[in-house]
Image (cartoon, rainbow, N blue to C red; front, side, top):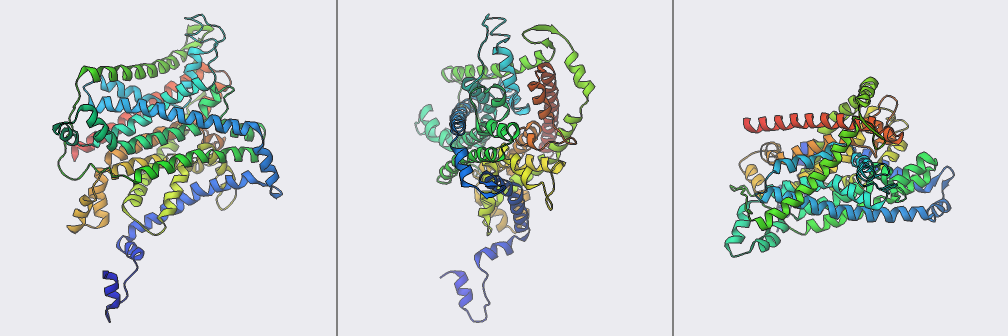
Length: 563
């Protein structure tokens, strides 16, 4: 018989609290944070999406099934959906495979030049999402520096599916690389050494030990890249050409044709593939255990030095890194060129234009991203901890709310924010708060994923030992769990800052005369064919982000030495 039943059965023993209430009484401060986070997610993530779903089937005259059927009967709707699915799946697979190869080579082999590979991999993360699209047009377009100047090819067609896959794969490979690299570094090399000691070949050890342990990071990388591809707006807008996607079609219907219902419906359809991918990922990971951090002393060692493995991996890594550098070097070169492909005379005119116009939009982006970043990182770690280590009543609301916020592409959030926060008591349209909220919601799941992956590797017995020794839940979290989450926390801070600074798909609907952002400014320069000015802005933004990330790394290293 349970302790609760015995207590309730004994005369005068008093009434025992139900298990959910006991959990609340044991951690009241954690429950308060849980309630605050849950309400915030419901208001800023779930409510806007629900409003978009409503708008897709609701007209000024009320619910209109005929209008919905008419929109769904349009061929462009299903063409855009099919294109989006194909692009997302292809980009996710290519980027994750490339990211895994880079992460494995950096953490498990004696490949030379690891610092160079790591630095090159960071470039797509710290720049606007459409920089590579701009570069591929300059290199391989009708007046391309390679196609026309070197190869003599006229009227080269760079627009369409093939270019989008290349661009998205290169742009999103760093997401998979950083995610998988963090988990590979957390795996104790003794596990792989034990396999080798028992007679396992290098391939057997990789297939039966390393690969299963890194499965959560691989699956979450596929998920992250797939959703990023589905919601990508800037690249399909610039080089999609006839290959239409849901994000671009939704924007075109709302802004170009003023068809709010069709735009809302297209944005709503983007939820289907994203939610499906996330549910598959959750189901798969929940069936396995990936604990590798047990509190015992661990060691990391480079295990592979044979040329038959190191050389092919090195060639792949260098090819990817040099391709990325080629694209960014092209943007840098164009920022000093009068008119690429037509007049390649070097000039400083584009930078003069930038400095003359001022840095208001860059200042706005830095200010808003600086506010959104700590909120995103801390909230992400707290939510991960609450969902993995605690089971408060109503946890499913927080779990599904954050799932929905991540699965929802930026387009649907932007549309939802316009309708939700345009009237009292939540009148935020035109303010900085609405942009900050969009930044936090769109990047929150990255922090949750990083924290969850790390917590899955930390044995619960470490925290239980702290509790047994008399530490409170709060002391255990701050003194035991949080230090173990530091790698995930730093990754979350770095990613949240860079993505907040370079975001586009959600905020393009939310900018105003008082609060416009650098990414929107760059896109408008590209659309008006001011390629040199756009390239100059991109270069300035990359330098600023690199400087801030270097400062973050310096602070992290100093705090690590002090500990």
